[in-house]
Image 1 (cartoon, rainbow, N blue to C red):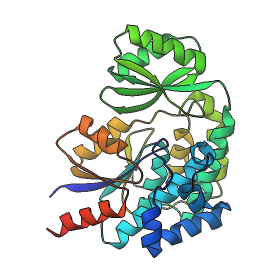
Image 2 (spheres, rainbow, N blue to C red):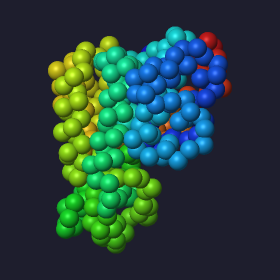
Image 3 (cartoon, rainbow, N blue to C red):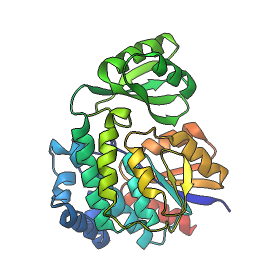
Length: 307
């Protein structure tokens, strides 16, 4: 019998109303939102459930997304749904940390609140990110290296989808060269900073200092870190890896391939949207991929497990 992995999406999947049915239906989910509010001083439920502009601003998006993911995760665990390992895309790596129980939730919520602020402040203007469709990572990397200025790969999401990041002019120049190199399309992303680029090194240093105040434990299940696409089974390097992740490449395709090679054949995406489920179908259409973002999704999953 194959293994199961929990996956957690990153920034960009957020929407008003995410997690609301879990909040209204499950005491466990409400307690997670209450804990996030107590830890950060923000009304996270209002942030997630009412129309507001803050939800798409990094310093608020991150705590809103993580709280929603953890609320759904805790309900899943309460229902007896288990995983052998876990991973998350960028911000979603913190959902994986929750699943692996490497730190107290209060610390996790405070940490992600600080991370969002540090990333927002690190490079407030002049940065950009663009999705490059139809080229492999080596080709994209070579073009980025040929451009003057700061531009690099932010995410290797799946075959045919690479995200580049950096200074706005350098990203624009790289996009033009990538189109000439055969990219099917280069799509600018609506983001508030050049995430996962060297321009955010200062945010990583600030996060490292913040991590010094947090107790980290060995994972109860292995999680796959973004920057090395490797299993983490001990606490010794977790802080270092999280600090590097802010400005490092998210090696998502390799992370998924690693889990499949380790015997994972069922992936459950926990949180808003179906982004990671879509990536999975491009990485390996032979695996089972399901998402849980509503109570209806959970009921359907539990029904399947009982058959």
